[in-house]
Length: 88
Image 1: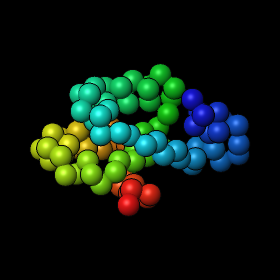
Image 2: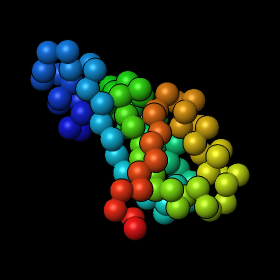
Image 3: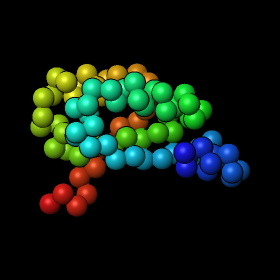
């Protein structure tokens, strides 16, 4: 994973963060929390160094399900960001 390479390859690399765009389809998949947790563990990444970006349209969907997923991701320590750049 690129984040691990950067963190280990540069001085003060522990502070490097990476943003990853997440599609609404993946949020619907139901395993995103488990998948993110497994990836963090497998690669030795601190959750606070990972930022998951979602588009604002995700918030218009089933808000209860989305809210639950976001809360679970936050409990892992992952950062969340709203990304609407270029969506019109």
